[in-house]
Image (cartoon, rainbow, N blue to C red; front, top):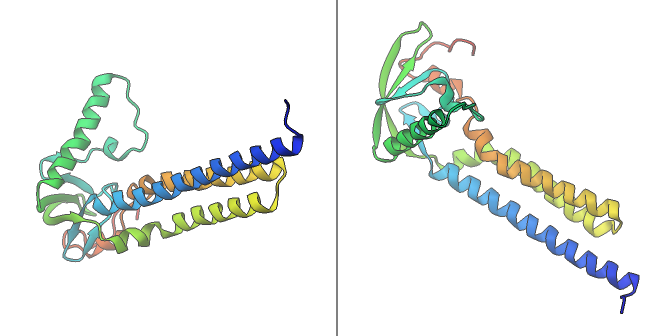
Length: 205
């Protein structure tokens, strides 16, 4: 027996609500996981500040591991399997190095092209620093979630449902992209300007 149209719409609406709630929970979980990942990842700190990212071109080497240009590429191109394997091995080597040492020598290229080495302390990024750098992108994701919830409750039409799912998709995108976007951003130039081996502004800064 075919159910009345109103009953079918109510059942469909219920499933839509469950799916939307599941996506919102996934978004919140990804946000927590992103903050946790950044907080527990190894970071370099000096007497004058902390280096949040290894993407700054001034960084040349950490102990025996060189930071070649392809190291910090988000989407590096590989034409052979061996090149891709080497890239992953390079990252694993540096991660193992940082996790197994409390201090490491860091080589930096100064404004005149002179390489200078200074000891850096390896430790987790303070939670306050992580939140300071990520709060804005997570706030945007939260606003998208609240907008999705508001639209879904106020507008029961197909267009309203689609818009609600679109807002959730945007929130999910921002949340999942936040850790990589922040971690690969350029280091604060103020940190390097205050270090003894980089007291002058970096080229292109």
